[in-house]
Image: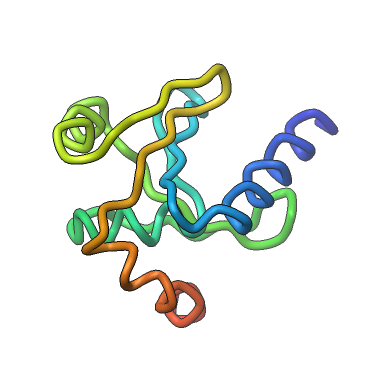
Length: 108
């Protein structure tokens, strides 16, 4: 259980320090974008459903990303594939709205 908690906390820390990328994590055989990445994903695809739940490090919000959606994202954003996640550059049209994240999160 401690490894899961540490991993989740690391995801949230990464989200907070990097405003220029969207992170997609493979969790329970699906792709998820947390926090700021969820916000950016919803700006790109407003039909995505935001899920809010109590997590290991407090409240967490995320969106599920299908493989098909990930392929669409690949067509518009440069992707970087790593061992822990897939990272995508945030398009300028979305990045310019980065300051709205805190207000969006409070409104969930």
